[in-house]
Image (cartoon, rainbow, N blue to C red):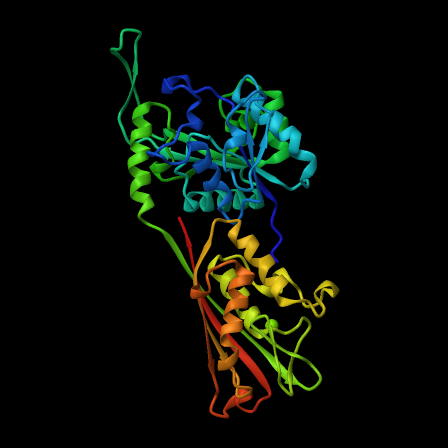
Length: 395
Ligand code: MG
């Protein structure tokens, strides 16, 4: 697996949001009719991203709302302070000993639920690059200012023209090395964003252009706009297809295990684990669709713990990691190429077992056996192969 620094996200959610004129802090207001609170959407936008290892939500010590929310794998910490900087610093201090020296930490506003994976990808890629090149200490998402900008006087009259040349609106997430960020905020506590604290220490911060959808929901009008965008978004679902392939050698003296069931046969499949060629191909199809690596990276066949491993356990483990990113299985379509034995009688048990392992309806699993007309290693009964396509969906 490629070495990369762990990546955590902190969502300060201890503010009261008085500008929204509502009965509770704005992060707890649903954005759409009967929909989920803004904080839930924001946190999901972060933890559904494959590179984010942990999301911490920082609420005030006396917060009565957070425990009732469905925040998935996010960890709620009662580290809220008097200011945003206090909250972020308390949270970084509370978790830093759980993470290695190289850990990166992003801070993201609870009021920016429309953050896209694409913008997060650009931010992470930029920080990887500037740290590698030594050209900056981190980066922030930001939007170039397109409107003409003026400064007003105290009567609301234009007092001054402000050139918009090289002006940017700073958004979040803002991403830096965890410990460096904590030190910077501790030394400069009266800042309104993390990049100011880093810069106050002489650090450089790269700007990463992001979609205007990353806007902050502050006024009731912002909420109305976000609602419209979300309702439109609800109708477009993220779809990903994955392809898995595997083959194993047929030998004497091994049981034949395919699709999680044992099939009576004179030969069995050889391998480090139980050599379940179909479950291996399914695992890779799912990992491929989610772009989360492959079975060999997750469960190396050099590792003693996977010797004779039950492939159902490996598949379930892989799927639980994928599902944690918000994916659901739409369907699996599988082909097993085997000259013998006849597999049709075993298909109901196989599909039922696969559906059971993955916790999905059996109607979503199709397994089709093929002979290879005596051609190739499958046809010569030297081995069996499997091919699987998987379709994942995410709201
Ligand atoms: Mg295999």
